[in-house]
Length: 316
Image 1 (cartoon, rainbow, N blue to C red):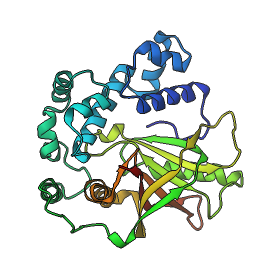
Image 2: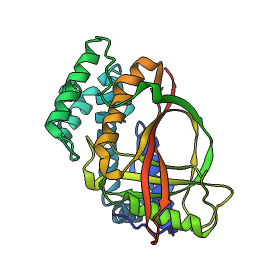
Image 3: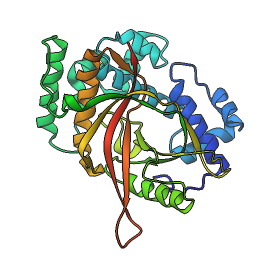
Image 4: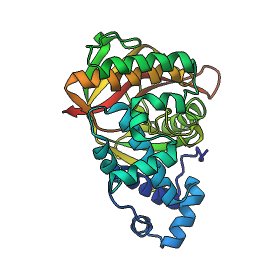
């Protein structure tokens, strides 16, 4: 797991910049030379530093993110042809994509899309067999266009479309299982902001789960913790420009603890698989989670919970 300190070295910021570039350009050629030029290091030093910080070579990291994006799109974007998904994820041909996908997941893209992912990647969170069967039946209803309208987890009256503001945030990433570690990072972010008098009851605080737990190994899952700041650009801090824009938002009656990840996953699944296809919108980016942080009485600890989940959207 990466360091939780709020100090970010220049080296770490450069590698994080490359990671962000990779994530935003998976459809493009991503050679070692090109990635090294973004970092300003020579290819040799870049590869060494990248592996030391990320735990994988740049080539393996790019390949894994391409495979994970393709697997995610196959699950949730039923109307997008497999060939188009291959190109969207940086593969030059369908045959190369099919071979690579089968090598990585031991399953061809068509079978994966039809439900094989539920068997290959059972949830680590809870009730694997029961929930997988439920989701399989729900997806089959959608594919058959039977007018699915029975939501198991979402209250449709609470699904809203909202505009979020463009803003600058301080960002810190956690790498590891989504059910562990993330509250510790939030605690560090909270105390950093509190010490600088930049956190209030209205501060925009959100997390971004950048990995699909159906697909990414738990120990490699990435989660970004964001706290909005105004005009704060310290040299030792990593900042991020949040694009804002239109989002579909689902707020929980009671904020959800990170250990209740199974509930969050089910709600995401319904937003992706059933709300979006009938809404007239398509999703644009990773989901995000609106966070509430409250100090615990009598200690320096904080209680961190997810009060709502959201997806960036635009009209189809």
